[in-house]
Image 1: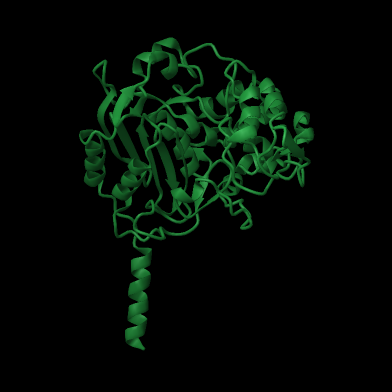
Image 2: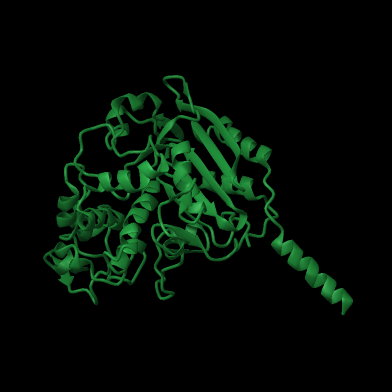
Length: 408
């Protein structure tokens, strides 16, 4: 009996063993990513226990200009914009402006007549049918509305390309009108389909608040948190600190030309997207991430209630939602409001390391951040490489957690 009790105690101790950071291992990992030619430049910031544990930068923000990746480098964070939008919308939920299970069309009437794409007839005309139920607000929060981007195959893709909802020449209101004319890929609630739903969230913020979306976010998130360098359209002089995005072509890293590199943030565009478009620095985004780690507040400033953040970081996907696109590639996950949520420890040595209860999201140019409440930890990994390189995410997580951390 004593042996069994001792064994059980030892197992519990091992299971509850706190994470011990090896900051030298993390720094070596970032250095190696650049030295091995896997990316041109990168940085990592690790915050744990109320203090910064590590900042490490390596390589170049602009290789051709000879400008190093630095603490004040500005980054196009792409889909790491999404959690910002989710927080903005859920502030309005706290105020009772909408319910999660309200029909979306109650607030955005253009979506009242959406239809589901059911293929094409012999003449090549799209076959459309009514959805099994309306799109709910909850659906636009968790990517279950049935929306798509414009890269869908076949006839649905052609319709989406013709409507081009995310044209930078559209206002948010015009974006919504065009998206509502694109048929759904499936019934609302039926599958997890990564889409422009977060841009619909931005339109809903604009509609409910009566303010332009960007103005609302500045007033209610950026200014209170002191995020002075985060915006959809930074001043022109900020370009001097902006990291160049590099595309992988033929196995080499090729810099984007200015027209593509600066299209979203340094040109005169009408569309302020909820799902992308922010420029930020690691330190500025740290303010936002610390607020999340602090259960809705940082440095005495409350942005959102703890209970609201609990909703955002809980798995909202019904088990019947078995079609989940690329989500399973990122781990054993559920999905909340603009966050993936880790539900179980890594199931194999090849799965991304992490801890149960963490929540995170990333951005197309291989950006990544995550919040790990179990270990009072947050990590921001920054680089500018397209297409997204999941091996860099895997390796930075392995460096943070080590091979022997259970993930519980």
